[in-house]
Amino acid sequence: GIRSSIYTAQLNSDGSIQAWKTSSVELPQAMFGIQATVVNDDIYLFGGSTSEQASGYSDKAYLLKVNALGVPTALTECTAMPQARCFHAVASNGNNIFVTGGMNTNGDKQNTVWHATVNNDGTLGAWQTMASLPNVLAQHTATCTNDIIALVGGIDNSGFASNRTIYAYTDGTNLSWQESDEFLSNRTMDAAICYYKNFILISGGVNMVGTTLANSVYMPILTSSAQVREA
Image (cartoon, rainbow, N blue to C red; front, side):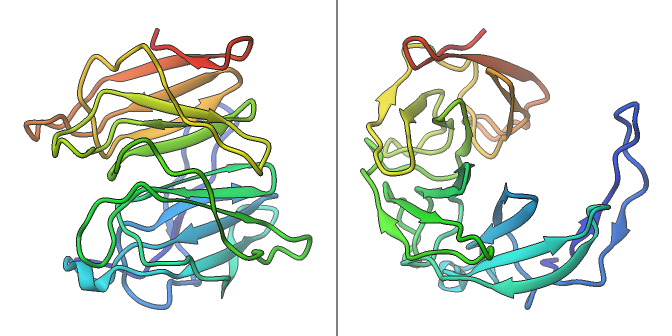
């Protein structure tokens, strides 16, 4: 079922993962679909749902403080998002946090993009509405590297899983969305994403017929022309 637990595990020097432990710090209530990003060694959590119904979607934002060992020490509420969201995606660039797309409490997919700045004390500033996505999008993934925010896959206005990547160059104040001319080999939603230097790695997810994917693909970020291409 839906849980309020937070789990942690330390990485060994060889990259392996130690045993998972249950943190003494918990979410205020059981939730799923929360999206997280890291800024200045702090973890920020956004949205999600307290139930499988859209009426349970949340607008809450939380700051999770961790110590030098990565163990959670405190969870505090931050400036709430303008509206409740689930199946959204979050990315950060420096002190700038972006919440993209997702579904509202009516279960409708959205094309909204919100931006908030992390203050020096770790609190969040007021949310600002940025340039909207070209289309509605939910159950996508997002990451940011080299000042480029990239959104991959998800469900768009066609109602089917997408194989597209959209991206924008951002300095924290401006966004101009573009679509990559390269497509994922699979239409993918609910995948995992991360970046390493100039590359984005997309792993797993579900395709348009509901089959769980076991493959991983990577995309280089071509900063000279601000393009995203699948390799």
